[in-house]
Image (cartoon, rainbow over all chains, first blue to last red; front, side, top):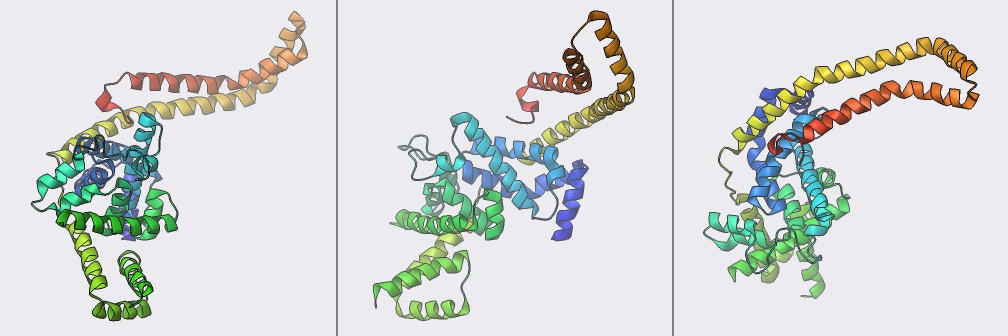
Length: 187
Length: 162
């Protein structure tokens, strides 16, 4: 893994176009899924997807190959979303997605299902997947990183720029929220 | 069975999925789950929830990868075109500074001569001499500002950041 990360770092330093093509192919599903989960909006996730790879090209020299490439990639994607949110609403992503705040990011009109919920509902015949869309994005994000991307808790702390203890507490709450949403969907 | 035991079991169910359990914790939890249907059902629900998260399928937009690859290649070409120009700019700045250092005594003599001619105070001459050194940096800043202004006139889809 370390060798692969080093060779990616060397390729990014040189802005190797073939390497970038390969990385885009390789990580397209995982990056798009992560962006969709944190933005809750398909069109926006698509925009951020393209923008993330432009940033990878421009800032590739900053990746040193000491950490997993995907952790660095997700950190770039997350920062783009946060920057965009800040310029738009002068608030941080965390504040926007915090369930204790007034309006979570993905819910523009609470009487209608969120775009994410619609996407998931379209794709699944059961309401199990649709219930994922009911969870606050801040918890969905940690669940995705831990259980889909299988990042270590320390790596997640790096991606999210938060202490390990906060990662853990979000994971515990997220897990409970996921279980609750699933139960609600079944009932 | 006491409430505390159930609380502990539920905490361990979550901890097992998030961080992993020590052997003693795992043994205790397994023993508890065998006797307690409520906690056992909770553990099953948690596993079901995680399974559904892991297997959730997200459809990818059509041609997302190829569209992105095209944009990235365009941007790479643009960066490659700009690189020699920028290198030239920094080389010119460096050469200018080196020349400035080498010619400093002569430039100071010119400033002193102008001072003698015009009767300007020495402080003004010293400030003028100091400003003389900032000319290469000012030149570089102007070029970079012009470049970023040109970039802001580019179509939306070509911009590096939103």
